[in-house]
Image (cartoon, rainbow, N blue to C red; front, side, top):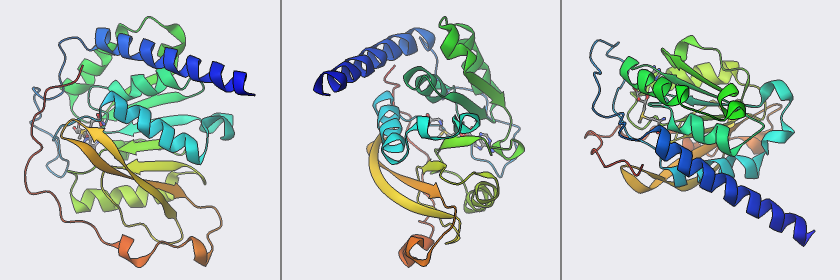
Length: 246
Ligand SMILES: C[S@@+](CC[C@H](N)C(=O)[O-])C[C@H]1O[C@@H](n2cnc3c(N)ncnc32)[C@H](O)[C@@H]1O
């Protein structure tokens, strides 16, 4: 038993080291900050910042602790990064979780093009075959095959966040998990907040992430405490541009 867990830990560490090495190669000299963000629907925020690689590893651990990817039906083993920037998270998740399909949807074409440039340089066939990079709005893609979703929505407007809540409540399958970088207000019969934890982002090494689970047959005990039904005030300043750790 102990030997098995030792072997598992060594495998995970080896996969992490290899992922970091490849990420560095794929994204050499690339940044999602200095791109053209003009000409898009003004209701969407093009403000950029990234979850760090440590952050993605923490996020995967946070999802896995609640429901390991292998416990979802095959057709639901999909990770979505909604607003995926230059696609780093999509690559990291596909590389660290061999059972998963990893999909990124990004509005800004210049960021999407950088994500595709990195994607085209992926040499590992298994990882590459499980990645999909889409240019467009996340409102135009049905996400009912998701198991895990990440949305860095701190800078999204209340209107966009409410629309997202409606979409996710309608489309996501029971037991799917969503991590937001801002706490959200869901109707009590749709999602339950499972936990909140610190995840390092490029603008804050201790940023709070809120993890919600889609309910199947909600019971009164599964209802959110009333204090979770308020949107925090939207941030007043743009995120500072921090050097990318990669
Ligand atoms: C804060 S960045 C997060 C990047 C990446 N997910 C990460 O955490 O490293 C948010 C991204 O969402 C994108 N975005 C905003 N509205 C969007 C929409 N409606 N559809 C797709 N992407 C959107 C922005 O262009 C930006 O690249």
